[in-house]
Length: 320
Image 1 (spheres, rainbow, N blue to C red):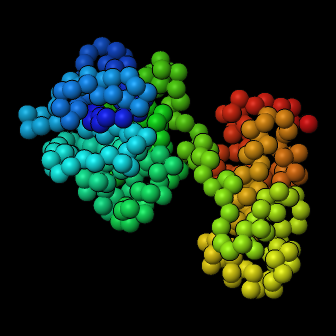
Image 2: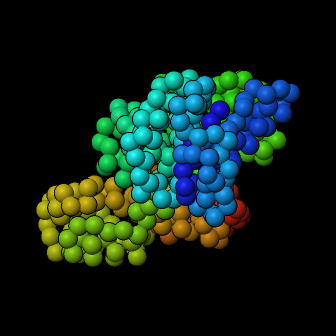
Image 3: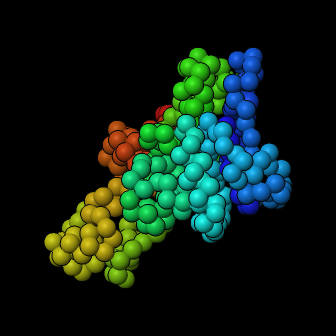
């Protein structure tokens, strides 16, 4: 069980999965996993937090027996230059391993080595667009915590590496053992929802020409008002048909879809404050009732408003 780490690595991308495998060994009573950290060479690896890791081995031809190889992510993963020798090593090691994959933005490193073409992958929500744009042949499952595609295993951002590691333990040793590991590490065996419940992408951005941006800013400031196509078009001084066509062409979605997403974002902000129950949140954000809020929230966030609110540590009386 090897984790490949490069300078600037996110420490938790390495330590989190390794602790899952170490706990599995403890639960089993023998060493099923032999975790090791692989570096470019044997020099200490300075992590993004400044703490240094000492590699157990170097990424070279002597490292031939790998069962599982995971590439750890880094905040600067998009700027890491692998170089052709490292690309070749990654390609060879991944081919020889029983399974390979990445944690967090480590998917960008695998993509740079040409190992993700035609694959379904997960990665940190913040780099999903850049991965998709830089490698159109890759299918990025943006909300997934981890994805299995053949011998490839990839995870979402940072702590999702623990979820991935736990799924590998379940794959190797069974559900009961994996549940014991989760219990000891005080983590979800199956975490509710996906990673988009933690995403802050696109919450305040506007798009399109100036008149459309002005309409979007006004709508975001007044989510409880009538935001039908007719109302928005009237504010823009355009016919509803022309406004809808222009909006879709320049913003990339229909006005109704944009309004729904904006209202979910507004509802999320209120739920983060932990002051109002869903009924009040629904009214203030333009949803007809809590059921409508719930359906839209689940569609965009993958969890219900109540589940999301609890995950943020906010608890209020339902009658408020």
